[in-house]
Length: 122
Image (cartoon, rainbow, N blue to C red):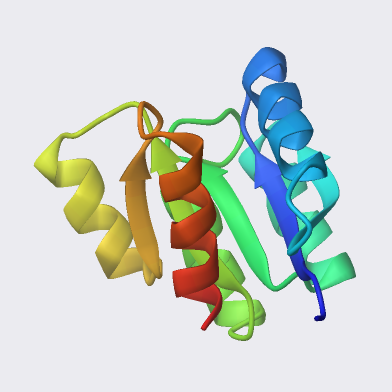
């Protein structure tokens, strides 16, 4: 089985590292890079062309929503999963308008996140 390549973009180091540790134990996933802000996320996606980019809504330099818009424009083959602490309608609607393939909350169990990654990839 070919692994799904993933980039994690979040401005909180502990959260990025925590997801990275979770993904290390999932045989179907391979985290190929992490980004600390939206600008770095866009650059890494353009350079590495992952299957899935996981973006935080609020990041420095470029928001996750603006990063999603740029990624979907330049790398339409990369699925974008927005992962946020916020359940606000305007974030969800703006994310959908930016072209994200999925939106989920950070308080979801990691198994739901893994299922969401598989869903947006397929």
